[in-house]
Length: 481
Figure (tube, rainbow, N blue to C red):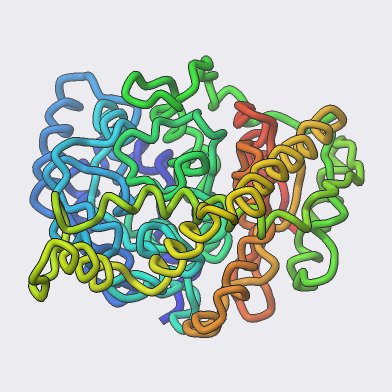
């Protein structure tokens, strides 16, 4: 069964209005989502569903509404990617090695959502330890694209993207290391925001590559994404990498025009390899921005060709270090076959990790090893600086940069699993944003001739999420081509 935008999807604005008018209760909203999760269980978007807890919390928030006080997100039902901790619930990272691990605390982002009366409905599927671009690397099986169930939803936050696209939750949290929010948002036709590195606390996010990982929201509207970001953003004393930068009122950027806005269009992102239908869809929106008073300018990001090799050298190095803690000694899977301490380490990791995670650990260990550190890791760090400087120079001339999110629409299940390099190239337009630490959002840009969603990426200056939200909101409300 194919799900289209006509499929019963509500934005938070619609829910809030019905909630405060008395037409709906939080309890009825939660029960409606729970029914839909069961109806579309075959999509495998969720790894765990908190049915009793979600209903109980909904009843409590209904009581708060009667008493006249509710938080900013009362009635918002949110799904959480299963590499983000929710207290007293499993946090598996879609891996056998953490299959039965239960978190003892909430991630800061989750805690802030709960403080504003959001309702967490469950944990969503992902590529194991967020390593992948298709959600096929999950120990618990792949998630299916709701527009075509023979295709992938993107990754690694595929479960969260599907939950929002199919109306199984109002919004969702994902994590983005090299495109893991934006690319599945593109494949599933929803909004997905990767904030500036440091804008949102990583406390409670299981580490993949610590200098790249960012938590961000999915939604069916720009406003929903802005609302969630408003709540989760800001300095956190539990995370030394979170930035002490004031959080603006993101909603104040919405419902604005784009007159005088300078839009950069990088020539390298519209070169060979980009699907013609995606190019056409984005060019229509660029033309509309020009007609609406924006100033378009061709720019160059000259080190673009080094994005993928630089990214995969650095993230695999960080992954090999971060994943060393999963050794069977303290928590997680321990091999029952082990007869010695050495065997416990080797067998627990060999049996507990999937093929893609092992591949990245080995690559990372190699580039960090004596004799190769200078040739690969140190050199990649230098190129990362050059890539960041490309963006710094571009943003001296323009306010935002617009590119495709992915070179293709959703590909078929199994199409790229035997060719890791081909799979890695799915992220060719997104990894640079993580290398530079700047924010970016995927904006739905119509459908191709197969009926599959197309995504467009809007990139902003560091800590200027407001401007990319402004452009996204303007296109959402005014473009009808």
